Image (tube, rainbow, N blue to C red; front, top):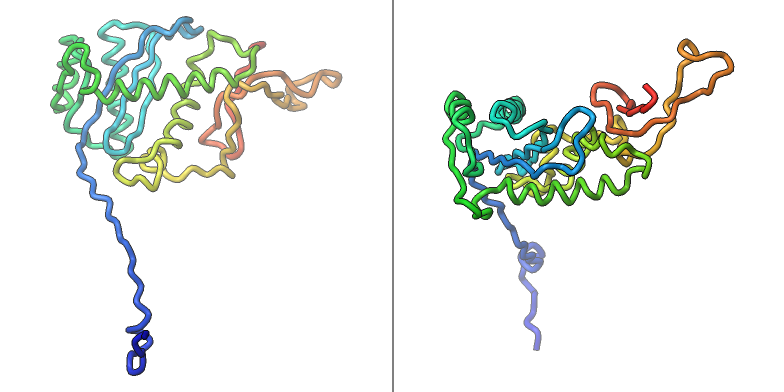
Length: 242
């Protein structure tokens, strides 16, 4: 027979077992970078490659277009990416990169007081940037394919900022998997302030009365590129006629 609960307080009789899990994370303070293969089409701005730089702790991927594989060009892209991460609070101590490295890049890394580690030839498991390149390519191809069929193919590089933004919104941070890599470094994204449209889709850009004739069309055809972060509900658009 069931035991009597007489004499047992209600607090003692109502026992709840809760499972508590803790996320233990040890920061690595590590950046990794590598260059993609040559893009099939040279852009109007002369870009042919993309430097992919990833921060291990936040899982954030930074994209920088490159015009060539020359040492000076590569070093300038490295400096741009490293300074960007520093400005957003990433204090890296180690840089992992491909074994193909120039003396110019080594001097730049040493000047930033960074340790560096080279991946073994043909061993992509040691290089987080290699895995990041796969994600970048997959995401960029999907963005390119939902763009308007008439979007100029040699303007692919102006879609990279939109690619970076949306990709990092989808990637969970390693430091805190409950938020995105984007939120970790750049704060909560305000969709009301900066609505997002499909990159490369056709748009009609309004022409103000002061810049058009009285019988002219009220807008000019263009393409959505990305949101304008320093404005409210404004967008960056590409207009081929101008």
